[in-house]
Amino acid sequence: MRKIILGVFLFLGIFVFSGCGSQQSAAPDDSAIILFYGEECPHCKVVEKYIADNNVKAKVIFSEREVNHDKANASMMVKRQQNCKIDKASVGAVPFLWTAEKCYLGQDEIINFFKDKNGA
Image (cartoon, rainbow, N blue to C red; front, side):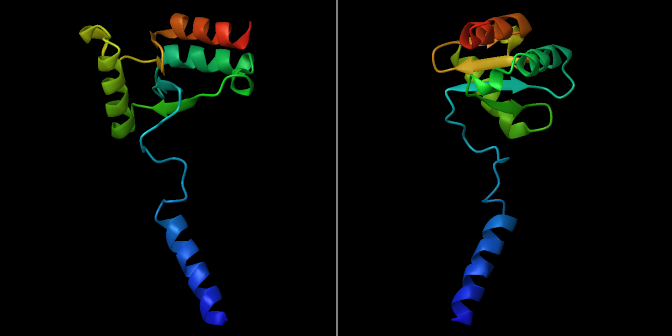
């Protein structure tokens, strides 16, 4: 019996420490709405403030991906922007909101999207 318990704990320890139990991975995101942002981006901070001030996360389900410090997230964003046919000069720009139906670039477009979804 001890061997079974020890085996289970060993498996769980390996699972957690290998990162398999982490939600922070840059694995493919199948969310219907993804907000791409940059830590240092002032326009992203405006969107972040709107989201917090209007309790958007309680009403709209979306994931967030930081792109300035995560190459996998940045690559995912560029691919989504190219699929949306974003102007080449704007590819890589944040804040960027991807939805299954449409793409939004810039704080005003994104805030208006959340206003519509949020009923504000």
